[in-house]
Length: 165
Image (cartoon, rainbow, N blue to C red; front, side, top):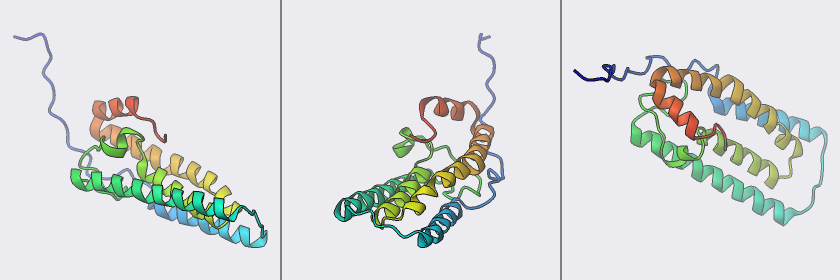
């Protein structure tokens, strides 16, 4: 006899996904379009053309590299990239050591980079409500699902890694 209780075998993730209401890129695109339409009504000239271009395109490049790295980790783990589908593995390496949501951080970097490069202040301003919607209606549902699917392993991961940065 041992002093340790029998451990239950790891349970399989639920067959359904986190029940998010839309594909996250739709939220980024919607915010971008609303910002673009607002910006058209209030033209501006920010100046600093060279600096804006450099900063903007560096952010875009960083975002694209980050999303590529994150997707590669999902492919390697053989789990779905699409948040609307069930997870088959919990990815905690690569960019997931830095943030629990590198794909959303990457999308925000690309979004902000394009807005900065093209001097679109209202597009950039709409990133704030966009991230609030992503956080409340996507990430929180994902987190509840992942906690159900992966239990203590996911809770430990949350204790080590921040939601955003």
